[in-house]
Image: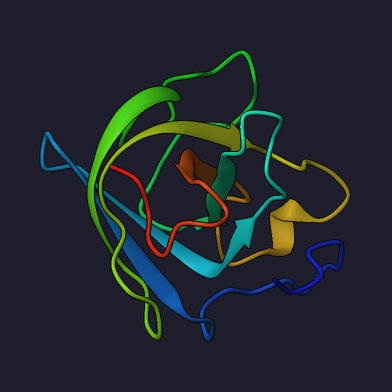
Length: 131
């Protein structure tokens, strides 16, 4: 992801990804990244997709869980479309929003809301993801 702490942070020319959920809702994110954490003590690898929300509204602040188009919390991810990556399919996920706030969001070309979609993916020694 690009450094967001600049007055000219723009996502217009960055890579977009689409995440589709069971109710037909889509999250479109820009300047996205996929992160895989080290295994936890149960051996599960937690994976997340994070990016700037481009098709939403709401503040993204902790006291506003109803950022549109889908509220924060548990959800069922149907599939992802992220260029260069295999689709993630049929996962119970957790959606979280974060609004970094000051100093520069008034000059950005987006609302300044980061969205993270995370899930427990797999055991580290398994060849593929667990459902």
